[in-house]
Amino acid sequence: MEAQHTPSSIDAQVQAILSGAQAVLGKAFVGMYLTGSLATGSFKPGRSDIDFVVVTDGELDPDQIDALAAMHGRLASGSSEWSLGLDGSYIPQQALRRYDPAHTRHPTIGVGSEFAIGQHGPDWIVQRYILHEQGLALAGPPPKSLIDPVGPDDLRRGVQGTLEEWWAPQLDDPHRLQSREYQAYAVLTMCRGLYTLHHGLIASKPVAARWAQQVLGEPWTGLIERALAWPDGWQPDAFEDTLSLIRETIERARKIEAPNTDF
Image (cartoon, rainbow, N blue to C red; front, side, top):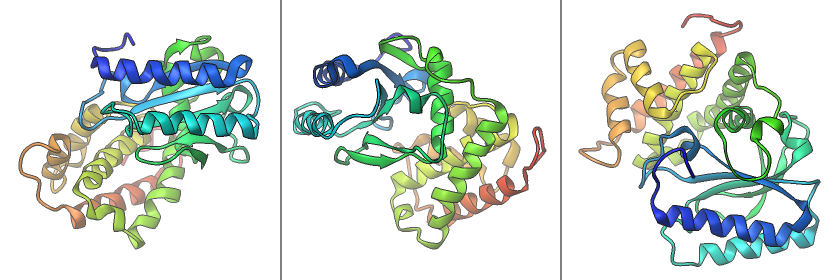
């Protein structure tokens, strides 16, 4: 892991996933890559997850899926502080090449969740971009050789799709937003989405948040500042303000129909 200094406990957990995946998959193992904050250099202990992608040669059979589930079960019951902080997917290289809405179900492990077949929504357009541009290869060919380039308008469509499929329903059923941790996550995600909609690029959440403070101004500056500081400092409940920012972001996204459209 060369992008930044990380705790040895993370390195150990990553190596455990890599060796476990290689043992289970054998010749079906193509490569393993770190993405997310570990790849972009914005990893923050206590807030960030271990995001990874394992690329496979073709679809996995039920025995391989069961063996991977057992492997992740052993990791989850281990003593590592990162045992429940994994966010990863096992994707056939043919499916990884480009986002196809008709081919989006892949074996997945989520933070605090069990290994299962998961649905990959439009956010995976963004995830492919990050992996293509900044993914760290732990084993296997360079990620750019496995993924087609993702353009600015593709990224905008990915953000717009994610806002409609994941965040818009939370305006009517906002139970997740009762958590102050999730409020901070939502605020920073909105900032990142707005940055991508405006620039057609991906920035780290801190960079996008600072940009959003300047562009949005009040009443959002303080809300974004507290999200950046979470879990440190005084954290008032921001349920209503977070809902308002989600609503504002969705409304702005719906107005964007062409590249470089101003807010």
